[in-house]
Amino acid sequence: NDVDGRGVEVESSTGLLLRPGSGLRVLHKELGTLALRSRFMGRPVRVARQVVAALLEREADGQRAIFCSVHLHPEGQVQHRYYKKYLQGLEDVVKGAAAVAAAAAGGDKGDDESGSLGVPVFLGGDFNIDPHKFQALTCHSPFWRQFALCLPAGGDSAHRCNPCARGDFAMVAGGSWEGRSLGSADFGEFERYAQRVTRSVAHPLRLRQAGLQHERFDHAAAEVQDLDPAGGRPEASAEAEA
Image 1: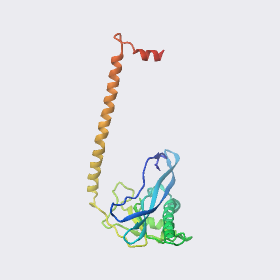
Image 2: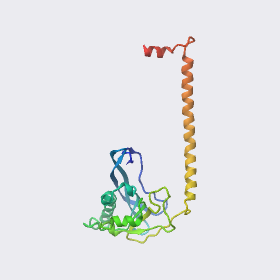
Image 3: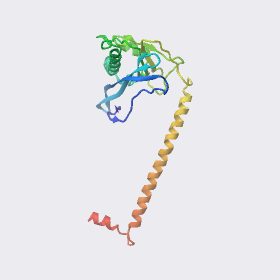
Image 4: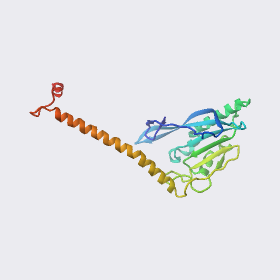
């Protein structure tokens, strides 16, 4: 589970979805946590998100690569001087998966003291920061210097309500990668889809709320019927008060 901005643990799930029939299989997965200290209503809180890296193998030729779906906290929540420390959980899961890949190939632990990787890696998702600024904040790390930006063609990659309109991108090491933004440039298609989802979810919620109100009305009506003709309380209630 994650810990939200209030410092409250909330139910959540983190994973990587593989399309059926893609010819990919999971060899190993590494779980980690991205955590930081923040404040909520004047009090210090710990905020955290889970992260997972998966080592995949293509059945056709045995090619292996590490994939990780990234969802970082907004840049404004993390002081720049602590940004590399904040990313340590992400670095650890990638290095852990790389070590398993190296061991499976008969090599050493998969990374040296500088964190060198021996397998292609794709980290993609919502970094919540401008891609070039992310590079600038991590350029002094030997581990992160192995990665190159992979920016989706087609303009802005995130909805305007996000902290950064270009905050959805990928960091890649090894291999050859490319990407493109899907949908309309003004996110109109996404907004219409979101409205349909909201309506479909809101309808059963309204029905449930109406059902609860009906149950309360029936319960209140039953209590009224239990009153004696003189307007007194039900015997059970009178005994309870006594």
